[in-house]
Image (tube, rainbow, N blue to C red; front, side, top):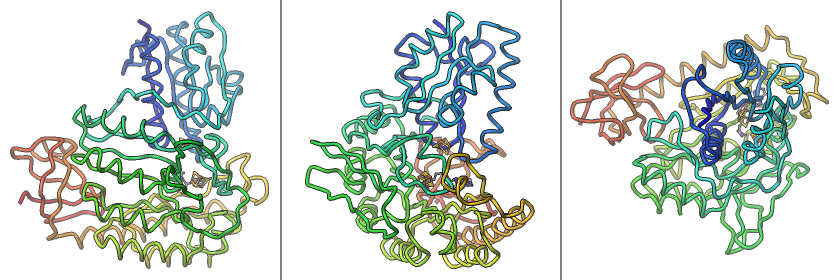
Amino acid sequence: MPKVYIETYGCQMNVADSETVASILAKSGYELTDNMHTADVVLVNTCSVRENAETRVYGRLAVFRQLRKANPDVIVGVLGCMAERVKENLITKQGVDLVAGPDSYRTLPELLSKTSSGGKAIDVELSTEETYAGICPTRLESNGISGFVSITRGCNNFCTYCIVPYTRGRERSRDPKDIITEALDLQSRGYKELTLLGQNVNSYAFNETRHETRDTRHETQNPIPDTRNLTPDTWSFPRLLEEVALAVPGMRIRFTTSHPKDMSDETLRVIARNSNICRHIHLPVQSGSNRILKLMNRKYDRDWYLSRIRMIREVLPDCGITTDVFCGFPSETDDDHQDSLALMKEVRFDFAFMFKYSERPGTYAADHLPDDVDEEVKSARLQEIISLQGEIGLASNRSDIGKVFDVLAEGTSKKSKVQLYGRNQQNKVIVFPMEDKKPGDIVRVVVTDCTGATLKGDRV
Ligand code: SAH
Ligand code: SF4
Ligand code: F3S
């Protein structure tokens, strides 16, 4: 059997896709390997979201070229978002053999057979229908405790800075039957937690009789949850979330990402009444400035965002709230930046992913809005954002001291063999004494101490 090695970069959706790829290849006679040096096929699943994500992959491609010097028969393939964005240049300029975009994975066995006779193969066709229905992912690199289930593919939002709608194509919702089957599969394999994945999970909509996708590119700024004319046979996100929670009552359910414009009260109520849905919402704000949010085409403003936060706190008082924020969007002034800092102080996020704007070729911003914030200014603003969030995150962790949480143990602490680490529902990492417990157990822990990054606790 030919051996295939898969390396994955980018978001959780890429991790989930690599598992789909592994499943497709296993069915056509490939064996998976963790060792790229003994592999016949080396695949890298890539990300294009910021320039540095691509730089990293170019570095790996250089390593794979070396690998081929040692073994000229090895086939090197690029999958994922960079395959879709860079296309045949990966073959002509980077010397790879195979390029397959996110909607082409079913054709991988054919593409590979083309390359086995020394040819090159490329398929970067995007689809409005492909959801990999009927393919049960092969779980890779997993701890066997926490798994991903993709519920939507693609994105219709066209935030002006973002490459994802171009690399992943139009939004499609997967059949709820497939989603629940995958949840049950994870449960039967002993998994204790699953995360429902999509670029914007809240816009999930599956019609059992007539499945439509909607292009929201030209819709005006006016966020209304559930504008989708849901009929009784249509599955919305809250319905799906609840059905999954009920289907696997012994598992913890998470979901990501929620777009603020579509974060509905009904979703919050579903979380409130199902104790196995984790009290954690990742709600990327991106900026605190109304002017910048408008230029970003985020379709909400600061007040809308803050009203969503108030609603979360009202319905789910113990909910962890995390975000994505980035500085240096075209024309961002110091006042705009101050608005972002002020919003962070007001919301007090438990955690944030923080970035500098990176112009992505082909996006609306790249074509229409000059990347005019100096690199030093971007760096200085990012530093301010990081240090503010550092203080807020530490204070949030300190306020947990004395509280008791159920922690899903995920593994042995890197620093000590007699300590386990895991996460509470709010998605904070807690380290605590192992005693008779093992990864996969849910353990009651009282928080006794913390750093900015982790909570420390004792068993209760
Ligand atoms: N679908 C998710 C996010 C996907 S990309 C959402 O809408 O929230 C993950 C994060 O990368 C984004 O939330 C944003 O903060 C950041 N990002 C996306 N494009 C970027 C760019 N061009 N430059 C810098 N950060 C970017
Ligand atoms: Fe990108 Fe916006 Fe879609 Fe998120 S919602 S993937 S940021 S276009
Ligand atoms: Fe990156 Fe594509 Fe995900 S650009 S963030 S891997 S959807």
